[in-house]
Length: 301
Image (cartoon, rainbow, N blue to C red; front, side):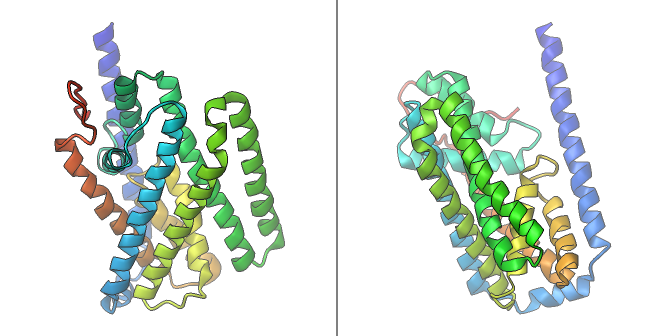
């Protein structure tokens, strides 16, 4: 019976991965049929490497802040990870999430390993990881609402985004207060860090725009990026590849922007994410958590 369940679980993982690959390929095929590669190449020709490296460092900074935010949730349930160990564990999770989508996810790995090491109920470690993700989405929603005021002309859309984001924050507070009392003290600081993370990534995109010599007042690109960040959270493609490019492509049509430039921005941001996450591979071979007498071998299955 156990063997049958294990086989079924592996089959489901393979099917999910296959579906993600198919959707990713379809999205990229759709985008490739809509853009002029010569124009996209022209957009890349005179790219400033200085600004691209600055964007990379700012993206890394945003991930360090994300790791710090998660560690606040861990401390709420008596998981006291040294900050450097927490960052290393976070980087390994990024690698798993992007490079091993058909295996164990980075979030699941953190739940398993910390539950074992600190003897904390897995429900609490799972809640910490999920609430961290959600606080990031709340921050993203607030930044998106702010940019809607700057970018959009449609008052209905602006009202919907502003009121929707504020209601989401209020609803989240009451849900955490009622059902996740261990974490209520962290609501404000993690929300603030969530906003800082998203603001840092917005500046990262501004730097990519500067590298491509796009004026900073072209806030439509930032608004499209924020929408694509929300969509890419959905586990539809591998690391958001493909679906983010589709959003940039369709968003550029809506705002009357260069489709080729929009897609190039999306691809450059993905490459920055790819490079940053790839650094986590080091901790597949050298465990991020060290404690005498404790084995925490990375789980790749």
